Image (cartoon, rainbow over all chains, first blue to last red; front, side):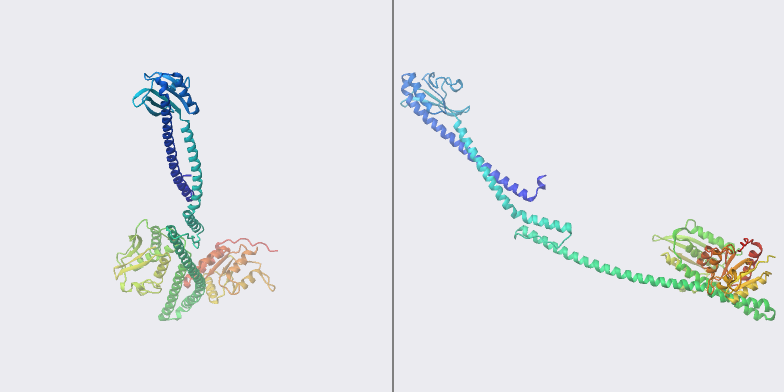
Length: 484
Length: 147
């Protein structure tokens, strides 16, 4: 685990231990160094004292070149096991006596070296003058001591240092473990609270506060934040509940309306069915018996009488057409929509072919743009085109060069279909009456019609979510626009 | 001439009169039997306790849909469910051209569906054509022998 991922507890303990360890190690090193330096100083002083004593005692032996005496004096060093070698050199530098009798060669320099004491190759060696009086030098005393004492002292102080270090580290660890809690506990508590809040989405939890320090401030701020989130959550829940309630209310309302609408629809259905069956039957009787009268008693009637009967028949047939048109209007409102891609150009050509087949006596120029398409119910759209194109055909009846166009333009990203004729047109004053049921701008004598066709067209366009509007100029033509 | 009869199932006496007039005016002289509602039509075709069913079936049934008691669709259903009349030609002759009536009529096995035109001249033409077609041109299926 990378150090940065350690838990704060461990990090704090590690930091405390590292710092105390460093301090202790430095202190111990200083202590040991001081010990060693002091000990070496003392050792040199002791060797110097001993050398001076030996040198003073050796004066006579050197002065008389008495080797045996000299050897005896040196042999006194036996008392100290650390003394590894010694020698006396005469005035000319030759060895007069040694200790022990045969010292190892590397411990006995062949000639005396300058006076003084120094550590060399793991030994403390010293050269002291042997002199009579102040300035008559008789020779040199050499003395060598091993440094085991230094090593012993070093080891001892090392051991002490290590023991102290260990105890101190243990103490430091104990203290760290006890004290880090002061800092880590509030952080841990904060972390636990934050986790609880984020995983369980329980914003009612609060972090415990341990003191008024920065961590305390942090805890307070965090708790305040939790409080605010809790409040907002509650508000949101209340809003959601209200919203749900409203949706439920609206749904219930919509359902109620749908039921009402369905009831109204089936009433309309029953009404239309009944109209279809029952309203036409009396008309058939009226027309039929008028015809019977004409056929059987025509001879007994004068011209006016026959004309009256013809008028009765014409009115009856007009009534039948009205009923049929109204039923069509009702049917487009009730018909189920099946949306598909519809080829309006092809459909318009079919309608035109139909018109031309049934009325070969009139020549009307139809201009249908190719490739016009729309999404919609093919049967209903056919009713739209049939009505609009037939209107164009009908209202150009008094025009010497009748022409009807079917095109489309794009307006603000919407496809607008246009059916334009150069026929009778209309006064824009009455444009709003154009699409109402039974609303006509021309008399039946001028142009035949029931006033239901455009109402039917508008209903179909509305059912497709489109719009329809018209522009016209009297005697110059009318233009119908629709979107789907 | 085909000696076949026409069974006209029609509740409106005006329509009965006009239909008979239209048929007669075109020299279609076959007997026209009139049933004024569905019950009468079924009684005629299948007989009752008092009266046996005719040995000869009509050449065609002209059937109105909106009838008192038992409506035209039910009569048609009954006709198609009986072995003896299963193949009897039935022409629905009615006021309405409601899509569902047309579809239901054909589903139940009508042979033809004609809407009565309001214009009596047209109506006469239609009746004439129906009479000529079903009585003279059409070859009916042989009547299965009864028990």
